[in-house]
Length: 114
Image 1 (tube, rainbow, N blue to C red):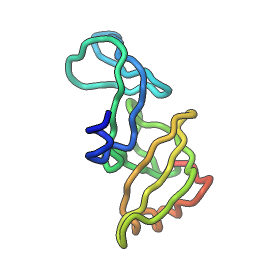
Image 2 (image 1 turned 60 degrees about the vertical axis):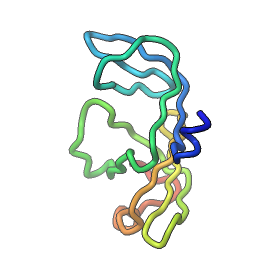
Image 3 (image 1 turned 45 degrees about the horizontal axis):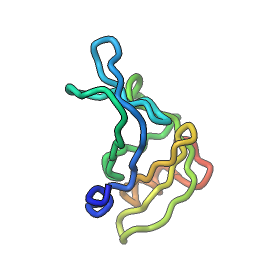
Image 4 (image 1 turned 135 degrees about the vertical axis):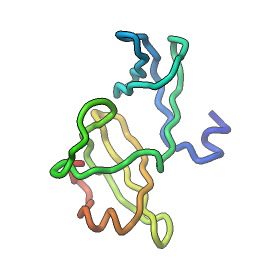
């Protein structure tokens, strides 16, 4: 946990890995389908903020696994070209890092659904 936080992993989700229909799924507030082989049991899943892609819900062509509806809780600048977006996905809070110009083009603001 210390190392994950130290290297910038902002999303640490407690849950468990379960086997389901020949696949593995993380269950911990949200269900995330995993690629690869895992041992089932309790874990803490780390997701880096830059590994989450924000897509407008009105233009979403992605369907299926690991696509979630979220509500924007807050947006604030990180650098001149990036922003940090705080999301609520079914009660699970996630931190996302994205390009400032993309956030502006999408019209992201508090309360936006993505």
